[in-house]
Length: 223
Figure: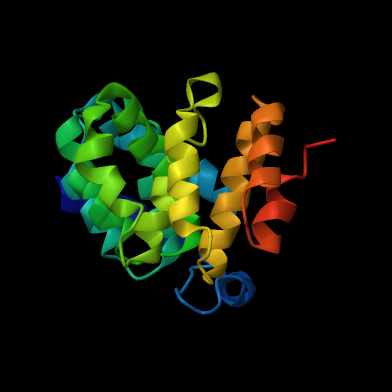
């Protein structure tokens, strides 16, 4: 069944691929991934058609389908996997977290990691908070930068439910990182939480040694 579904999606994609679009899309992603050249508006139309035709959203969460999409070369397939997961958040279980870790560390780049961290991972951690100590604490100090970025970002949509102490602890464990994607993640997490608690963020930024990029990004909404 999975292969049949992949065949349906592949047909939709191949009928709508655009080599002219593909080149700039690949350049935008620094050449890390090939593209079919299907821009977001059209891809979402095809995605909607695919989900309706297959009915997969009415079935249990299907990790095998996601893995099959992840194994395809063109990045548009991974984007369908991200959309499928976003539409399946209520179905996620604690046992799905190792799979999310595999996705974070496979074909890694900001576009996939930034979707997986606050949505599937954030959802699992909200439902099963014990995974924070069991797993995500380890991500915050992992050698893999994408795990660290995911740890910093998993509370991104928590708003008033954000665990400040945890957020600030993860940030300080990575505050001296020279990695652009870590510095940027810190700034993004601070900026997002500043919408909920600007006073706390201002005090934190003023009281800690953060790199200029993190400060600049984190302070954008502060007056």
